[in-house]
Structure formats: structure tokens, C-alpha cells
Length: 109
Ligand SMILES: [Zn+2]
Image 1 (cartoon, rainbow, N blue to C red):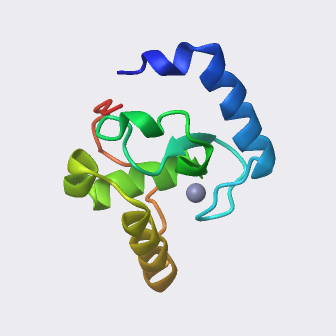
Image 2: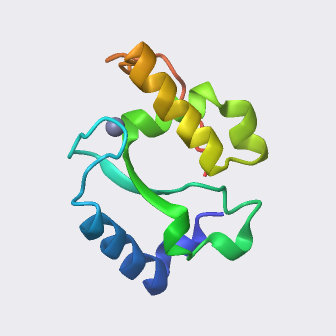
């Protein structure tokens, strides 16, 4: 599933998106551990894997928080709507990812 991440195409795109977003997490503004993530899960939207508009930059913590919160939808299909909801929730609840989590690392992607 992660094969595409090893392609030159992805790596170029990744850099581009990171640059465009100034290496900043679009949710919390963190500038460390920022990664490029898909908005709509490419598992279900194959045609969107290399689609720049389907990519955004989020930090590891937000990504994980999102995936925890919307695990269900994540496993099915994540859409921009889910992210919007998450960002909204984040703002309202000021969701701060806990420092030490006991979340077991399940590599979903
Ligand atoms: Zn973040």
C-alpha cells in the first residue's frame, strides 16, 4: 500500500506540497514532524494518489488524532468533509494530542 511513497513522482509531489504549505501543519500550525497526507484515502480513491489538491500537510500528532477520531470513516473513506469536521472540532475543543499515548502503532497506511 505504501509503494507509491517510494516513487519519484510522489517524492517530488511531496516536496512541492511541503514547500507550498511552508512545512506547516494546517491544523495546529506545528512545523515539526509535518508530513504530506491524503485528504481522501487513496486506498479508495486510487485516482487521487498523485492529485495535488488531495494532499495537505499535517503533523504526525494531528494526523494520528484525526485517525483516532475518525477511525471509522478513515477506514471507509475520508473526505474533505471529515477533515473540516476534525478541524472544527479541534478548534472548538482545542484538542491537544496527549503527550504520552498508549495508542499502539497500527500502520494503517
Ligand atoms: Zn498538527
